[in-house]
Image (cartoon, rainbow, N blue to C red; front, side):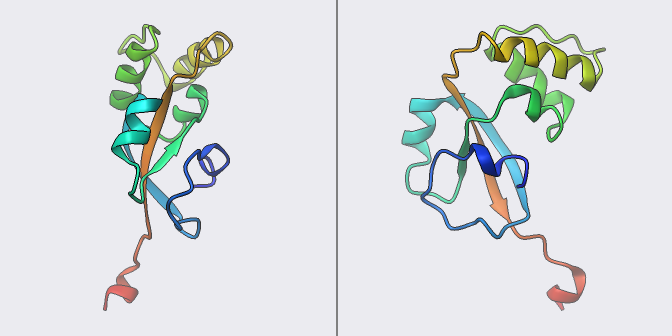
Length: 111
């Protein structure tokens, strides 16, 4: 949450106390605003190079394809981060990344 919090563009939800969030999808802003209008999902305009720190490689590759950034399967996360940093300078920022916030419950809290 601390990585994405500054980039949240919707304020529908009250989940700022949540510590964790789950990646849902990366889509066009207009589609995201319509699809997640009255939900607790977080729409974020987070720079792509910051996504590499919090997403798995198999999720990063399709996001790169949407932005016409070719990411080879053998690339390291640091190489992907550098490609996204370069792309962020020319990106039109017409996509948002959607996350779903949740509280992680410890085993003692479950009992």
